[in-house]
Image (cartoon, rainbow, N blue to C red):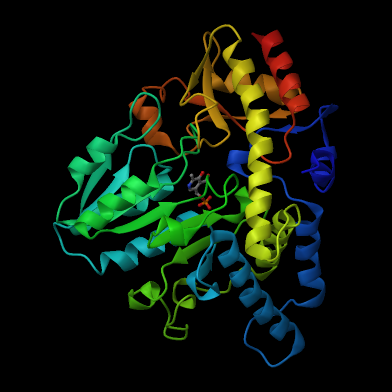
Length: 403
Ligand SMILES: Cc1ncc(COP(=O)(O)O)c(C=O)c1O
């Protein structure tokens, strides 16, 4: 992958913040978008702006766009086809809708397993079901930022109906052992729901290999706009009783899509997937996407290793989570610096045009477990396809002067 050409596609990478070249290390909170995505959104408004299912050109174009994008998202996720893909406002809203629908398949005393590592969006929607007598069990977190799989296995029971876990942690970059988690589900006949929001920008997903019932992600984390994406195993959504209007299609994938979708943003989702595919070789969209995601990941991990090693060498810095060279790791890290709050670190970086986040990033339970919440959480930095070793060098220089 030619990194300079890749970067050139992103107009915001040429922005100055306080007279400095902007450096976006805030990818885990949302990536920048390439001009292809910006243009697709604007084109939609120029040529296709309409509601769906009308007998006129702009409406027909909108219908085509929605179905085409479902197929492209299916290719992105390795899904059986567009009929398995639903759109939503964001991942959290889709997960709340799913939790209401799945509750209708459960009885008081049934159990759901969540994890201490997950983003609140994959905990809160399930925790609220306690009000209906559902028992929530939480997989413990080990000090190295990985899940305690023995604890998970001890919590599986013949009442476990659902296991909800993340694919990758948005705070430590840990990639969870989904195979082991799925094997546990299969032993007790529970459904598996995977939050792939943090995984999707860094690895090619293959839902058939993951063999999950539900998988969610969000396009704004992989160079697209704010649209939530839901994969349901073929036929499964049709069996669920989702909240819906009598005027709405009762079929999958539409039955969970309440109200009018953000068509223009969905045009941006299509463009984001095409953009990713354009960096890979292959005969068809899935193979181009696989190749491209592989190239992006290799580049990310090289830049990430420099960031991790550079930070680790700075005095007073503690990095949380697994080492940089851990196989199957997402290029995201969190750290603290002795004597400086995460907020102060980010404020200082921000003055030099470096975008990094402080706090808990909604992975608030892990910060509670690590006892870091009251001290302002951690500073988080993430590498995505457009970040470079030169950006890392500048960040380390700015940070080392501050320290
Ligand atoms: C791992 C993870 N899961 C879920 C979410 C929530 O996604 P959304 O903003 O689309 O609701 C986020 C957002 O940061 C995330 O990082």
